[in-house]
Structure formats: structure tokens, C-alpha cells
Length: 184
Image (cartoon, rainbow, N blue to C red):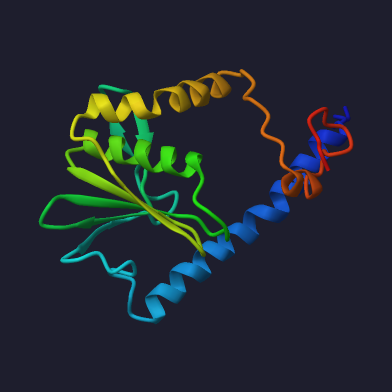
């Protein structure tokens, strides 16, 4: 019996097979560079901060907030006299995106569920950095990300997310010739 794959499936599998190892290699290279220059413990220069947590990949268990049923892992967390700062690194150049901030806030809320008093998140790309002070209330923090959490849950259950076409994304997409949203 022979299983036939659609062109879309073959392209998707090929894309994942090629990009997965490349992205993992970039992550390791950035992490190694931080370790080599002696700044791995506090590369952002957070005042009076001590590294208390680092996401080391699949073997690192995610945090979970039972009240809001959110799961997440910041890339790093630093203990300061004021509380905990959670950090989300993005390997791309360019500005910090709203989705990056939402992801960082979700990870912070998850960490709060495990008892870490996260009061700030920092999202850093290769060329930009954004610091966001979080509300003290978990309920208020959740209200800020509630729409994104609902969208992610819907997609996970098989729903479709909103298309967000952009010329740079569309030019490099393997599906641009068959996508109704392509603008390249």
C-alpha cells in the first residue's frame, strides 16, 4: 500500500526538515556567544540581578498557571530585589512585535502560577529591546493576553487563525503561488 502526499504536505515536511535544524543551530550559536563573552549570567545588564532559570529546550519543563490554564517558558528569568524579570529572546533582526510581547506575558503568567513573582518582561531581538512592566494582578495580566490565548486555543483545536500577509513573508513562503492571501 502506497501513501500519497499532497504537494503542500511534501513542501511542509521539507521546510520543517530544513529550517528546524538551522533555527536550532542559530539558537545554540547565540547561547554559546553569550557564554563565551562572560555575559551569560546577565547579558542585559539588569541591575542587581541573578540568573535563576534558563530554558534549555525540550528537557526543561514548562510553567503552568492552573487558574488561567496557560503554559509557557521564558527563555530566562532573573531574580532582582524587586522580584523576577522574565526574558524572551528572538533571533531575528527587526522590531519587537506585539505577538512577542504576548508570548512573553503568557510565559510570565505561567511562571507566576508556579510561584515566581514576575513583575517585568524583556523582549529582545538582535536589533531591538522592549521592557514591559506587568500589572500586579494575575487577572489583569490575563486580560491583556486573553484574546491571543483564545486564538491560540482555537487554532490548536483545528480552527483557522487570521492571515497576516506581509510582502517580505510572502516572498519567501513556499505556498505563495497557491495562497489566496499572498501579496508578493
